[in-house]
Every structure is written in C-alpha cells, then in structure tokens.
Figure 1 (cartoon, rainbow, N blue to C red):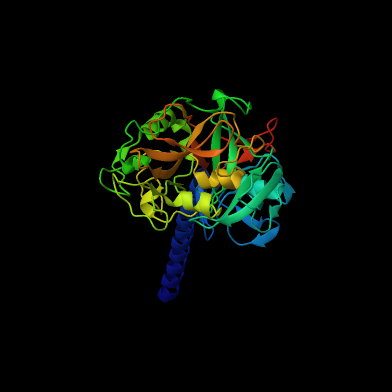
Figure 2 (cartoon, helix red, strand yellow):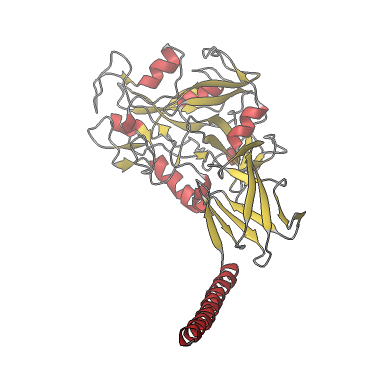
Length: 427
C-alpha cells in the first residue's frame, strides 16, 4: 500500500513538471515569434538578398524576361508591374515591392501582414546601347572611305580595342543625346558597351561657335618638337605622358566645372587614341631634319582605311580604373580622333557640309599628323568646310569639342532626334 501511494505521488509530480516545461517552452517560442515579426529578415536567393518585413514571406515564383528562374537576375533589371503579393490567397495592393538593381535587394512592406506570398517579374532596363541598336539596322560590309558621306548611311560595325563597335555615318538625324544640360551627337557605340558622344552645345543648333567650348585654342603653345603632337607628352620620348598639352588642360578644367557632378554616368573604361606610331618607312625623332609622318596619315591619306584600334597602349588615354591603355587621365574626357571623323563621313582633304560632324567651324582632333621640315609639329583638325585637314599645334584658331563616353548601363528616354533626344536619366 505504501508503494502504491508513493507511485501516485511521483506520477502527479511528473505531470506538474511536464506542464511547467511545456509552458516555459511555449512562452519562449511565442516571444521569439513576436520578435521575429518585429524585425526585417533576409533571404539569400543564390545571387543577391531579399530583405523583407514578414516572418513567413513566401516567394512563389521569379520570372525574368518571361522565363521562370530560381534567383534574382544579375545586371540592370527592374521589377515590372506584373509583380504582386497575395495575403491569405488574395491579391493585396497595399503590400509594396521595391527593388535595387545595384545591391539586388528586394524590399516588401508593410511589416505587420502575415501569410504573404509574392510573385516577382523582372525585365531588363532599356539602356542607350539597346535602344540605339533597336532603332537602327546595322549595315553589312565597309563603306568607301575615300569618299565623303553626304546621305544618311546609318550604322556600320567594326572592331575597337574592346570588341564590336557600331558607328553612325553620314547625315544621320537620330543620334542626339541630352546629358548634363548639354546636347551631344553619338559618334559610336564602343566595344565595352559605352556610348561615345561629341559636344554640340546648350541647344540643337549645329553650326557656329556655340557647338564648341572654345573657338580659339592652341593644341600646344610649343611647336618645335615632335613631342608636342601628344595630348600628353614627355620631352625626348615618342610615347611619353608626363605633361598635359594646353588643350587637355582646357578640357579638364571644363570637365571639373560642368561634368564632375555627373561622373557616375560617364564610363571610366573606354579611352581615346592619340596614335603616335610612325608611318611605314619613317623613324621617330624629336627634332628631325626632314619631315616625318604619323600612322594616322598613312591610314587616312594613303590607304583610306581608318581604324578604331590603338596600336600602342601608351597612346590609348584612359583613367586609372580602366583595364586598358595608359591610365594617365585624371578625367574621362578627350577629343575626337581623325579616324572617327572619316568613319562618320569626312575624308582627307575633301569638304562635306552634309554629315553630322559639320559645324561650319574649325576644331581639333587628337590625332598627330606630322613633324615638318620647317620645324613645326602638326595635328589633324577639321576645317570650317568640314575637310579633314591639319594645323600647327600652336595655331590659335582651333575649336574644342569635348568627347566623353556615356556608361553602358545608363537609363534613357527619347528617340534620338533633335526634337526628342535620348535623355540620360539621372537619379
């Protein structure tokens, strides 16, 4: 009898202890759950992180460009209006989705709703490169560069130091861009996807001094050495880059005053080729006794075969963050090169008032021409008749039309005409 009583007492005690343990666990779980709903949680989805405000958020499906995937996409994508969330099986417009393509972070609010399931639909954002290629047919073959382009020849494809490059040629009218308060003309799509544009001024007037930041600038104040054809130069070196030319100093000053605040939209990868290689049969000298010619003269005058490739990396002016070139530029800005003038529709010593680079004014390129037996260094320029010509570097009647490269992932609006230019979207 005493054994039976003891057994009952133990049973009662164990039941009480069990109830207490269950109660403690329940309290802990309840407190943890409440805390969970009060904080923002994160879900890694292969690439990127989803930040959300609901403890039981369920991503039901992710589609990218109409195809179902299992991760947030890499690159320049945005959520479409097809994305939505449901709460307890019903679509709830009060649950808001936002997405940052830079961090690949998705936010879902509000914080207080339970039972949320979300359907995410992504499309690639429209970039300037995508839009240009969608709006233009790319011609096959290669134009006859011995002749000027006096009609709208559209877009052609060639190679540069980064890959496939697409350039406008002739009297094109759909290559206008508005950026940083200025109007520009598209010269080409670079191989890295950035867009090369040349300054046109504060309006769409295509001729006159307003299309340049200066109409009376010497390329260099010194002229009696071969080195002075360089956008940057070093005394006694063919490819040196120690000292800024006068024109580079002017361009850098203008950039710092007008474009530095928009630097996040300008490519730091693409460069500008001031080719100082010599024409076949010539050797470089600082002060030669007879005339010497640079490689661009051979390409454009002799062979009629312009190129976007830069044969010497010391002459490919890039910033320190670029993967190529000399990495000597403090600012990602330069000048048009003579090869680009010819591909756009100009020609050696032939006037052309029809193509898009014509502005009825003289302006500099950054391509060396020659060092003459008269003791002067010469650089290619575009004459007021839009003839590809040349001038002594100390000539003070040359204009300055800056060239920059818009980053490959910029967002744009517009159609590229002068009345509806591509406008770079700036956040």
